[in-house]
Length: 80
Image 1 (cartoon, rainbow, N blue to C red):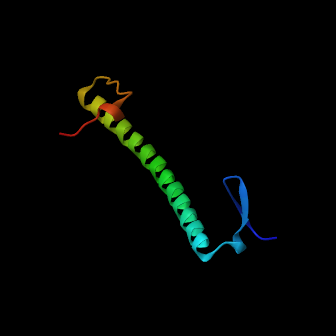
Image 2 (spheres, rainbow, N blue to C red):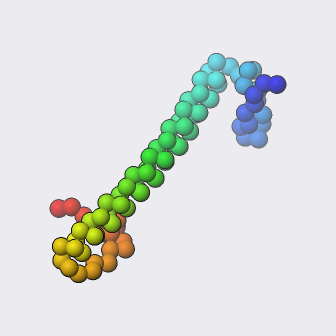
Image 3 (cartoon, rainbow, N blue to C red):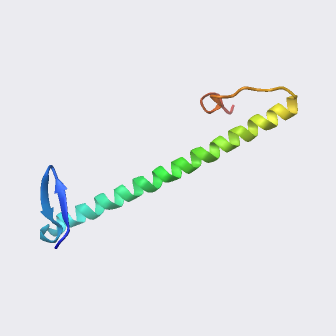
C-alpha cells in the first residue's frame, strides 16, 4: 500500500505525484520540521530566560536586602 497525502480533502498517492509535486512535498516537510525545531528551541530559550530573570531578582534582593516583586519582569526589563 503506497503512502497518501490529503490536500483540500482529496487524497493523492505519493508515488503517482509528479516530480515537481514531490519536490514541493519535500519542501513542506522540511519547513514543518524546521518550524517544530524552532518552536522547541524557543521554548527552551524562554525557560532559560525565566531562570536568568529569577537569578537576577534573587541577586538584586540579596544586594539590597529587600524583597523585589518582578512578576512581569519579562515585559518591563530593558537595557539602556
